[in-house]
Image (cartoon, rainbow, N blue to C red; front, side):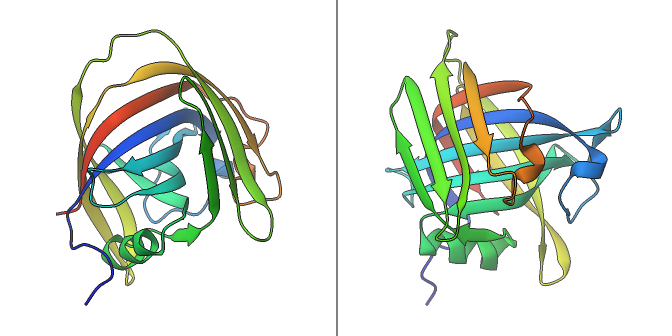
Length: 200
């Protein structure tokens, strides 16, 4: 018997997201062709706190790049969680390359986060909420990953309430997110109480 729920996973999440413009030459290896505009790709980094009443509760840091597809698509190149259940499910169901890390989140209106492995720190960030109406927006996209050598496109649907935020990030320049070190995000958002359905 699997230690993780069968797909789809129905999750509830508080997320903080930043968007970066990264030259194609600086992108990490991806399983699908990046979607480029003027030689740059959009990279999304997110701190996510999965909470009840969702099926799983854990913390996550990820980086994903917009890639070509039939609909809005991304590929996750780096991702850390503090849940062995999430790690196993992500890898075995969808080919998402999850690793374990220590993830510490604090605060609400001013949110801070740190991620580190036993070997070194990965990233830190601080988000400050800005004004905006909490409109509920449905969205659908795909996550493209390699599973057993085959490109798998996993559907994701979500209901989100995006709110503008200001964010300050620091990345370990020698770490796996070092390609973002020294850059500034194009925009940042808070997505409180998001509802996600991940998988088919």
